[in-house]
Length: 237
Image 1: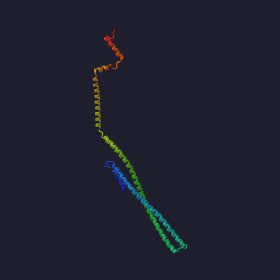
Image 2: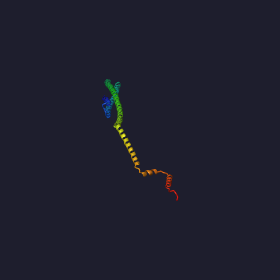
Image 3: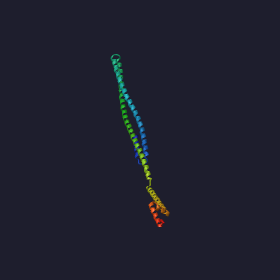
Image 4: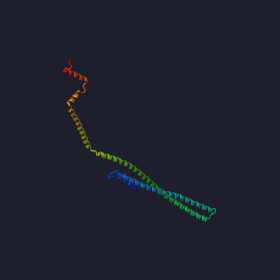
């Protein structure tokens, strides 16, 4: 069937190494599913039509069987009327014979209709199998399509991330870090240099004041008395 040829084409498309983009097998699979659904609609229509013919044959069997019984009953009734004197025996025989001939024709119609019914039922069974197979195949490919679409998303995200990672130049990054370290070292050295210059620029008064900072009042008082004694300022007149 053309259905399975298309399925094989879908499989070949997915396995074909010449296809670079995952979107291509997705589109092919979607088209294949659409084709399968179109074939399913046709198969369902054919199944319904064959079933209808089978139903007609079955009804025809019943109708022909009923007709055969009716003609047999009429033949019997004709013979009974001839026997009771209600009908001329010769005429009764002629009509009964015709009724029996009609019965045989009806029985032939029964056999013919039964044959057609069996044929249609066989076709229905085959078509029903085909419909089930197409439905199963559609379900399979729809599930595979969902998986394929999920793989496309993952692959696309991974590809984007890998591309970004590949664009990162490790050597340039290390070079930039080294330059930053050198700049920080230069700034630290410069700060230290300014500190030393600031210390060198202090005046003598600044040094004296710094030396006097933090001295206790007791020590200052003792030094003052010693200084007075040295100057003779502590002598009383």
